[in-house]
Image 1: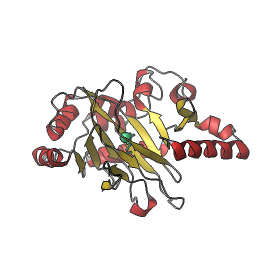
Image 2: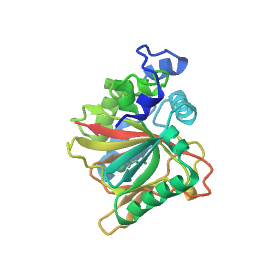
Image 3: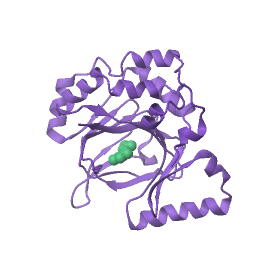
Length: 260
Ligand SMILES: O=C(O)CCC(=O)C(=O)O
Ligand SMILES: [Fe+2]
């Protein structure tokens, strides 16, 4: 399937070096973090929310990119599996087709694993050199840099972390991600991470990252606080709760896995 990036952008080799690109090249990690203290907390729970995780100016640049520049596509599952619909394809649907799509998404959610959120596949865009103006290309380089990976190895205790992938996500009213555990066929995901880039989110808007035990009890809830970094071991059962119809904000994040 052709990616949103492929459809939406001409292929350009040279990435323009804007001030935001230069800023992100300077590194992501907030140098004030106490990595040893965070490691103690992570070792105890296997789940951790790091506050003020990125350098503040970097968080602001990433927020501005997600809130203003990213060409989102809608991610969900149909009968065959994961699907993406580009913004233009959604715009072409009439009201009846749109209602049908919503019904189909919810029908699957009733019976099985399902999600609905806006997505931008950062690794695909990077490899295919699509949308080189987006600072997200620099993020792909930085989350695979020695500095970031070493910080992640120190916090998680996983010396085997070798690389990271990433997608940008946006959850608005009606979006959700049902219970799953992040395991994949390659079995190379050691930890999941979520960099939260939403300002002024409210807990009763939903969009909460929740961890579940074998009895279906919620064991931990993480608010998507601005510039927080959620880290947790894979596998772990978790979900993103439904964003309420009255939520006026969008929940922005960059999320992916720390891999072998
Ligand atoms: O956005 C989040 O908080 C979690 C996302 C997630 O669980 C996933 O993409 O697998
Ligand atoms: Fe997940």
